[in-house]
View (tube, rainbow, N blue to C red):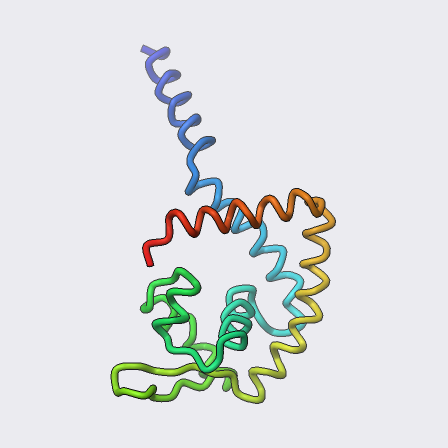
Amino acid sequence: MNSGKTIHRKKRSQIVQNCTCFNLRKASRAVTQLFDEALKPSGLYATQFTLLAAISSQEPVTITKLSQALVMDRTTLTRNLNPLQKEGWVEVVPGEDKRTKTLSLTRSGTKVLKVAMTHWNQVQSQVVKTLGTGNWEELLNILSLTIKKLNPY
């Protein structure tokens, strides 16, 4: 009887080791924790930094276009934007028609992003150096391919 449990445990272990989702999320948590720590002096979390940078690079941008660019559900995006709005870093205004909302950074949002960029540059350089430029470039290529092939949008 014990050997049956061992077989199932081994099979479950193989699933965990080989599960694409599990391993991507685990790697994502490791990277996020590293960036969160580095961005602490700016007062931003990595997720907030990413949103501010994405808005800044596309502004003005609709919530729909931003959610598609980030491969993020609109509801989740809206929930993540709320603290940025409360801090006065992101402005949400009605779009060209009443169904859309347009996002842009405020002056204070631009300022906090600029401060955070210094910390981001340091940790980004550290990641590239730690992984090695070739591995880092390969990682980005594989992630881009993954998004391109599996993105539902």
